[in-house]
Length: 301
Image (tube, rainbow, N blue to C red; front, side):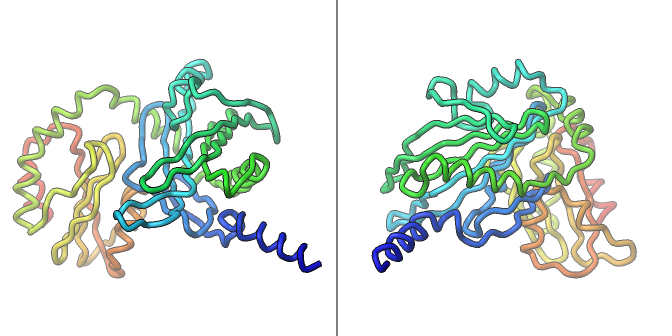
């Protein structure tokens, strides 16, 4: 009996990463239940005419060399309603939705009415090197693809599938007008918008400096930025297509803006500012040429 208890305890410790308490994550386009050690990679969110992709990771350890290793990663992809299945399969094979390509090789089978794909990879983040399982769930009618990896020492294939199934069953899409959003994304194909963005940048920099703000940092043009704050003003750039500057008056009077007027990918960062009172949100499209950004700021401030 004592030996059985020891084995049971060992099993719980080994699989604790997916038995631990779960918490809801609101990622703007939807909500999902994940183990509480997961973190959303807000700046990694990608929005393209074919799909929106959200990234989550579970921290494994922070090492003496300053590097952080991740025991699990999850990519949630919502596919455009107009994406044809043949094009989807081509993109899938190229690793467009995650890092799992057809060249890596994987097993495919149907279960629960969904398509499942199983593969392996070697996770490397110095000093960690761990064999990992990769599981992909495709729900074509619902236009959803979830790809997950986790260390093999924590999961076998059956446990990994059960883990991802539980995660997917908790997914609730919130954006009722998602088809319209993809139609909007379609209008911004190509890179022509970059010319407008860089033409706008000097004016934007000068206008923000007058408020004591810097241009919010983006890892790449088109990604979500951090929030910059000085006194009553805060600014950020969303990762939408097209990308909008959000200039928020934190001490507004009169008519107040709802928090929902802030783009979903910026809401968590804004909440961290701890602003409880009336706000007013102003948005400026940075992907089209703006002839008088200074005048726009003067009218608002």
